[in-house]
Image 1 (cartoon, rainbow, N blue to C red):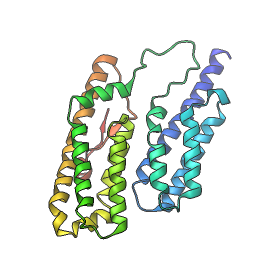
Image 2: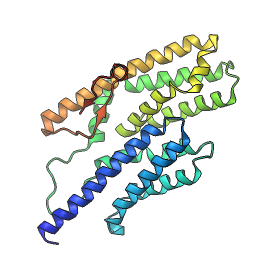
Image 3: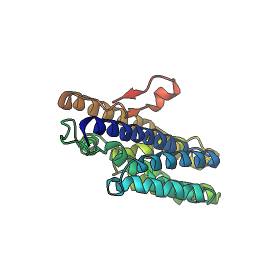
Length: 260
């Protein structure tokens, strides 16, 4: 393959890679909503984008994360009406986002100087703050709600238990696992289960503590993003424009998103 042919091929792969990033980001957002038909449609869009990328590659060049995205988006489209389908698909697909976003296509003779381990960078800055502590606080508060015996609704209790599982599984995960959990958490605070908790007087104190912790986590995540942004600019002389963070407070004020 001559250089020009290689460049054309690389542009094609990169274009399809970016399209898949866009579709899977949209899927992570729609997963926290309640309209299951919208979730199915977006899962199909994501599956189509993943298959489109896969068709440009030989079988040996298809990363495992790509095959898993295809597998689980197709599975969700076929099973989306099942009670646990969204939760299962969310757990299977979201951890793959880190690999999707950080993947470097090794078709050139030279390796790029810009390569770096973003998750390692994130992990270091996360440990400098109190993000893990805040995750544990959220988990403990929800566990107290469930253990109180005040929640009569089986669905509400099940949803809270699933939230505990989600937070436990992803609190030590990659950047993208944590951010996907954060998006899910923000969506959870707007759903009917959280509204049901609000109607139980005994749980109001715990509910307020949970929401206060969510606000504190919002501030902490913004600090982590700013730290990463600063190091990337100083050390790598670069920025990752595909990574964005929207502060919950700024979202309510409809302010501009922060970009790393």
